[in-house]
Length: 242
Length: 248
Image (cartoon, rainbow over all chains, first blue to last red; front, side, top):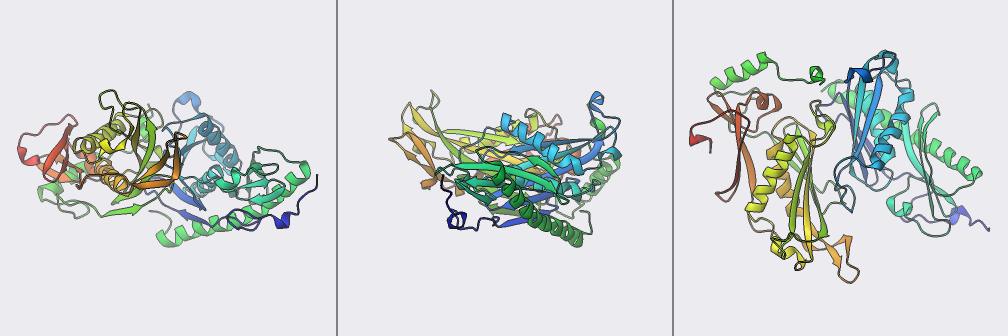
């Protein structure tokens, strides 16, 4: 195998290999919710709302040692080209669980025994990376709701297109067909560097996977700064509460 | 059932709403027949054939139009199909729980379906691809983002606005495939502006565009779907009653 020089690889939208799509974060978008946020990356838009902590029902689901985080990921029927039938699917059920696993490590849930914190994520427009956008929005919404957190969580999808490692794949890149095709690696991590969510599908060698994780680390740092700024802005504008 | 966490408008607030109405007043200083500020943002999802965000005060809904090909119904072999669904997302209010669609959301979908269908706003006869075999189905999907009352009227405005923006996707007859992203021009609509308006009765008083708190105090309501002075749909909702025709 003669590896093509990565530097010569051209992304369909002309981005640099380590360049994120244009991204934006906003906090406090749903007045009814205890906390809410929007995260947009390119044409992918996710919103999240937090309700709670509140008493867990039914009672037998209560955990007397710590509170429960419950995440629900849902795509709008018109967020993609082929309409999605409303209601949960196998895919959305899995992503909901993965989102819980990604966020739980930073939450101080031991402060809320027998309680539940509900996080609802809704994808308005999808162009790949929706689970990562959802996690980014949810992490901000939890902070906005005042749930005690040890750290922030930032999420990004890195990938390998043929032999080249790139960050924040678009749908067009996810469907890349040349050479070794696409490998999609969504990763979430805390600001201190703990990886709380890690998935992959495609084909990749360990050495390149390490490279991909390094790229995710650098990218999450950029996302973290934007999340932090959005949270600060929400306080400056509204005095912290609606 | 976990009812204790659900925030219901307290009795004192309800009492105050009724008292204010005695003097034709409302908490937000609106007149009884005055709507909250309406904003419509276009094309909130590029993947939809047409989509909008509608805000009525703090109430917010997203409405999107999607189109697919399907077999026609046996009683209309040469006409397109229409399907309206509403999802009350738990994201939009602490009162909404996860689970199969509850009555509220089903009713919103059905009332909006009726005004659009009965007013013949969409020229469904132009959405036939092959008679008896293949027609377009127009889906109107409604999502609540923040529920501060009167989701129904906001959704009705959104449905019409989204339809007006909608473009018919290209259909490749040879491959029998829809080419999303390419279009064949605007969705054929008749020149009219159908809408749904819901009148609520609180004591002797009638109000429009209630907030969540006012909706809680409402005894009964009537939703009127109309266009150009013609009434196309009616629904009296909730178990109260009214006796004068003033409500129309």
